[in-house]
Length: 523
Image 1: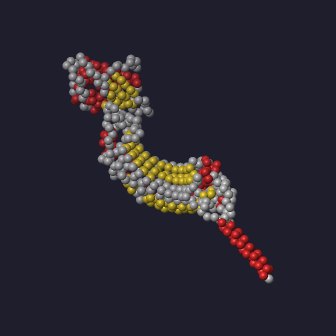
Image 2: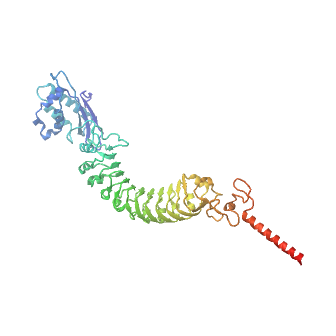
Image 3: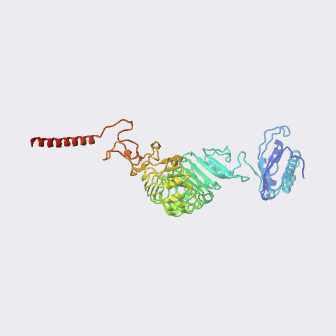
């Protein structure tokens, strides 16, 4: 084993062994002007045989280097340090041996009149069983050259490293750790120029991508994706980009786990036309996309966790088969044209945490099966046509923090006390004209947007609208006012009606007495 230190003209770096696979060794040569001149004088015929292909790959780049001008080769020594990637299965001591032999060989070639090329050839071929030809790396970038060219055509600067830390807002990429060349696994195009294009050939070069996203890129969508890229993608995101997204562009993405589309028209007759083949999906967001059609009745992505079809033009009912999505945690169908009842089977979706069905045309009562959703945190049923009384089981949902029931047709008395309402971050019940609260349980300071109840459990009319026929108003029923006092404590006399009746009766009695007395006198 060679115990002497490496010669100063070499620097090596070795990657760890991985299951006996070839290692990648980076060798940096510090060559002088005279050495390079001697290398350039080697006949090209020597480097052509296939048996010398590893050495040919080594010497070809070096022979093309242009040393600085020097009148005497041995006086001024200008150093060059090209890096070379060597694929090998040798260990560190063999690397040292290679370094020593290569240095000695180059030294002999620069000092001897006779070429030492055979010695260099033998030392390389005996010490290293090359599995791949040597290749010269491009300074500043380790990315696949084809992908680097593709990125440049998409507006990425050629001077920066495409595999560096990505920008949080602009165009960004991430790469794998392959060698000798790394490959793109993530691409984000942000704030694109309207002149940007996505040619099919460029997309072919990016077939290693696992994730692609467009942010504020109003460019024409590609007509189709290369099959290899379509099968490689796991995440597709489009935010206010591509002008429109054809369903035919999305449906081949069979291996997607995440689909995010918002602020862009989706050209599909129904959601099922897009997601029918995406069996691995865990998150779907198609929002504000002008998408029409019904909610799917059959689901193939049974591991779905997040479903958002908000702000579209969906019609029909929520099918009972939606309970097949047993892992679903977020269900957002707000701002559509949906109608019908909430299916009882929703209680089987025990993983649900956030449910929003607002701004639709749902009707009927709230199903009691919702009480089984013990992990429910947010429930928004606002701006629909729900009716009936508000269920009492909401107070038993310990994790509930948002309950929005406003702008519906609920009726009766709110069944909650102030302790439950105070635990909620959001509680809205306004806009239900037949709903009221018991003022002995809830304070008017809560500003619920509804009236208190009278003794019959009906909403009390606003003060001053009308008087009851028995001369007392509704607030008397709960002792919040007195018939002889107003809110300021000022005393009021008898009402005008009662006073008029009393005066009339008094006059009548006086008249009867007067007539009786007169008859006695005259008789």
